[in-house]
Amino acid sequence: MATPTLKLLRTSLPGAFLGGLVRPGIDDVLDGLGVFDEVHVERASGIFGPKHVAAKVRPRRYDTALLLTNSFSTALVARIAGIPRRVGYDRDGRGFLLTDRIKPPRRSDGRWAIVAAVEYYWRLGTTLLGPEGHEVVFPEDAHLWLQVTQEQDRKAQTMLAAAGIAEGERLAILNPGGNDPSKRWPPDRFAALGRLLTEKHGYKVLVNGAPSEQELSSEIAAAIPGGIDLAALGGTLGSLKGVIARTSLMVTNDTGPRHIAAALGVPLVTLFGPTDHRWTSIPVRPGAPEALVLADPTLPIDLSANDHPERCRIERIDLARVVEAVERVSPALRG
Image (cartoon, rainbow, N blue to C red):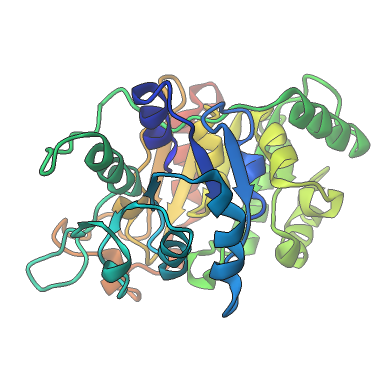
């Protein structure tokens, strides 16, 4: 979700040395963008984690840290590393660690205002680049972007070939997982959708899941004729990126692979339960539409789905609505 801001920084600071501090796995996702001159892959976990990471970063003598995450530990890393300017949102008790404290937008009742993550990050980037108080306007033509490296594509091809998938087969990917169980559409409905895509539309259906979700992904794949459980094939986020780039449709809960698909220009159908879709609104690429299926599309705009979990149970989304959304992003499937 931060890639438009990263691109802004790279194009606005062509002569600057840009380093990135990311947790393991995210380096695979960002590989190929050409934004960073160096990537530090570290996790600041545990009581001594920030000190350990700061020691790795300090030798570069960075003069500015742009803290895209809201994490206290990341701000502490920047402070311990002696980075003179530290730009970030003043929240979660970390304001004293920052030099440029940006107030997050709030609603009239004091709770966080619903701001799309891409705009949330963009405001940080424009604050770093522009004068204080600069009005943030997220460009209409900006979108998420990622690149698949040759090595990632090769690994994806090898994985798919090992699963018996030939070059040129029409691929759809289902993403039924998610960290929060309340965000997961029922497995039997994912399986029913997969059977429809296979039997009616000739797709080879891939079912994605994190290693911890393999029981879920294998259950759904087994219920689809010829379904492939990607979790059983192993791989990394980098090879998953290569696989997603080869698909022509993703149906997903509101979770990370959705953002990868959008950044690679894959048509998307995303299902939202008791998490407000406006937090993660995605500016999609031209020609790569996204259809959102909301548990309660009648929820008034001044209300948040997060505050109405019963009304916005994801189980309220039936198969027919998802099929209609699939046809909307893939007109060739109609009829």
